[in-house]
Image (cartoon, rainbow, N blue to C red; front, top):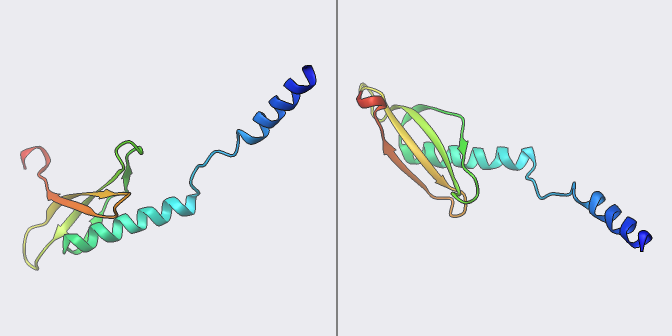
Length: 100
């Protein structure tokens, strides 16, 4: 009986470290895809993009803040982009920080 428990514990301990965490390369690729999609859809001229804010899997979204101009000579605008990790689609809306 003790031998069976020892074997079971060994199996649990040796496989518990094999969680299905994504590699750094996979996260970088996902961030690059979200960035590219958001920047492309924004139609901004040389926008600045924030670091991606990755929400947990229950939400399934990545948020990216963009700042730039849409046409030459215009004032900069601020956009927030929500990228859907499953569908690969993005939704973009303008925002004003605290009413400005």
